[in-house]
Length: 204
Image 1: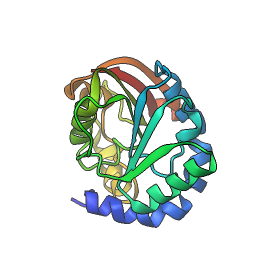
Image 2: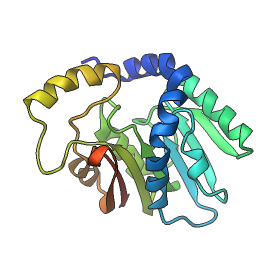
Image 3: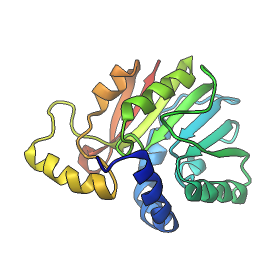
Image 4: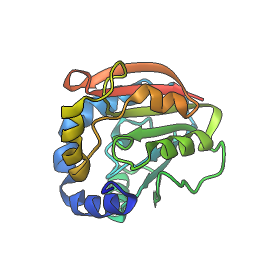
């Protein structure tokens, strides 16, 4: 299986210098919409998982304790530079989303944008998100998903062999993944490409 953690680290190291050119304009509105679903309160501790170059940072309230992780050192370096340029106090660390180095029930909010369709095992990433969230914590997800009402057909599965190699899985279904990880979905909104991309807010 080509979609492995090592492969993700390699390809996103290659993509890092160009990532902002592709992702900034296309996903600014979806990011803002997804983060706008969260019930924010001053002083919350938030974790951005698989945060890339930190493109979510402009849409977060300032009165937060913010932690940011990504698998790829090149991405984390750019995220740290973005935070410093914006004069935001953000702890940026290289970390695998499937093995978070944080204690249980540590965060009020976990943000997972454009990562569940990339991880080789999204179930493990969601299990880790559940573990580090407080009992009343919120999970903010934005990603591309196959509709919940039907599994991917043969043509989509065939195309997925290519898209998974270069970027992302296009056959994963949001609701089963999130619910099976122990979350209750509170909000689910289409944010891009006629619902291919969705923003979901869930609680433990």
